[in-house]
Length: 286
Length: 185
Image 1 (cartoon, rainbow over the protein chains, first blue to last red):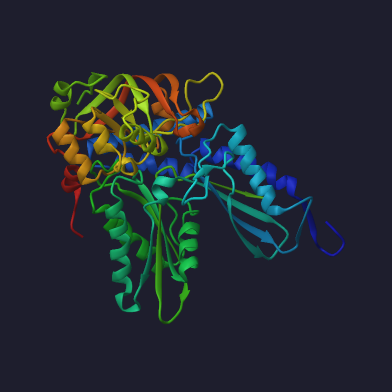
Image 2 (cartoon, chains in turn yellow, red):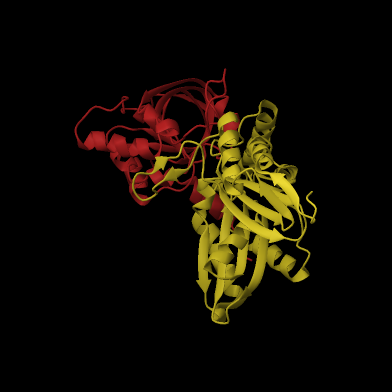
């Protein structure tokens, strides 16, 4: 701590913690998701669907025990970071420190490098899974709080941005969410988790949808109105019958999480971020 | 229902006998190939050049593994989304490909080619890469190592678990399963 209430934090600490987070996210399915798979297995009516849940639970056990990735798609490394405004980073660039942590974590952890540069043409693998995607917010305090997600491509590809008209109202949003899941079918590795971002602008609603995925499966939104919206969407999505791996069943979706903010009077943006059952997220505070 | 054991390469007779919904355990050689490898395979066919493996009766696995830890045959090795290979699959099926292992929906031209030339589409459990890797006992890169996880590899599998989702008679478990459990709310 410096004299004027500013906390110095060496970026090497960021690198070290990010390295570990990348590996843990990919080896250890979070307890909330593991419990949701167990509950899903009990609730699933389809015998084939139940068998899929059994495989997923056994898979998570193997990955944890043997320190191997839950899924070979070890994802794009995505970070949400709340930086306390009394923190002063020293020793180099914060963002480069995050990338170095990703480089080390994906290299030392035998994780797949799944990032390609020049997307339209060369599509050359960057060979170290960088760059990471880093969303930072400046918040009061002198802590740095980091959430990391390993986001697979198959589910991300099934996501949607919907610039709706205000006249379409809530029903328009319901139709867009259900439509997104219906079109996705078996592709995003159901049972899925849905992050829904409502309001803001084109970039904010997609960011909110991603941020919504940081919530723990099984948690209930503190706002009763939003909790009701989430429950309605979950019921309607599960009524599609897509089921585990799309083979038919009652458990298509483990959870729907909504993040909401105000929007322009002319707009009603809504984004759906689809996440596979390997809902890999880790959290730490420095 | 006990899984039916089948061995590669697949014959037309075996392909005809498989129906959407059948659980199988596959043993023998299968070929790892995904996006970039498919692009190159089709380019070779278009140029009239030989392929890195015998296509007749072959089963391809749409998969790009994570790196193998020391002492392991392969890293995690679950299926990737098959739809990205739809642009290439009909030609490969026409040239003798008999089986595809992946996950997710297929386009109409692929389904038509499967019916016309007798081929079968299996789904393995997406996101069960640590479990599926246990059924892969040998792994040899046979083409384009510079593609890394997208290289073509010959994999020896033993009792590799999969389910027939699309058969050569037009059967489609994705459509049938979903219709069975759909509810109106």
